[in-house]
Length: 253
Image 1 (cartoon, rainbow, N blue to C red):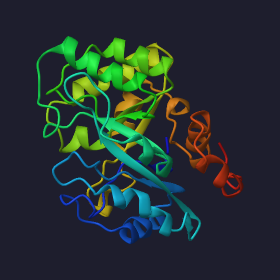
Image 2 (spheres, rainbow, N blue to C red):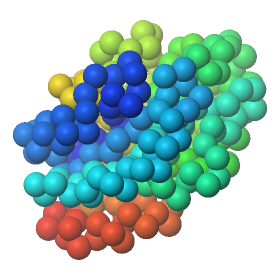
Image 3 (tube, rainbow, N blue to C red):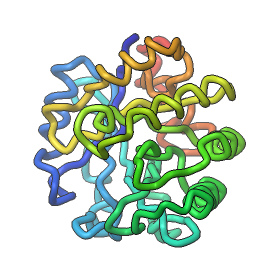
Image 4 (tube, helix red, strand yellow):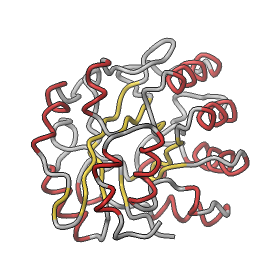
């Protein structure tokens, strides 16, 4: 199993991360990735990037040394009822949105029903394409309800490699359950490194190991290849899918 794109990473625009755009490009080239996506934190995080940061990424090239770059964001699911911290006029500048629960924005809660409602309302908003690190034990949810809602709205479930290795302790059993439910309900996931340093970009080893152990198929990983992820973005009407269409023809599905 090989994953050739990574769509969740943070640059120095998020102050608790340590690498530049150039660092990520260099490491992505060295590691044979086809495509990577910048997803700095949205403004409601205490050290989230300013809105201008996201609007001005047009100054960056789309392709460098045959590796393409996407302009994403990791948005914050809003308390108490859901939604994200992205104004409508920012959406045209974004190729995709990861929506996540973060403790500084959405206080941890053991109310499974309320957490589930907030996540499903966010899914239903039509403003996100990916749900980030849902295995976080600080936010218990009804996983099957969320996966069903995600499938109904063509939103994929992120399997976050850092949740297995060093972030959000206690996430592993929840992430495994999410993968099992996603397979059972015939839906899809994305694999991500959630890198805060370019040294880990393209790292999915533990996620791949877990996927193999439960028989989760590579065909249900939307970002396994650049072509597949761009096709997914095309389903959401994202212009970048057309913009990178010719470039992506060199790769197989």
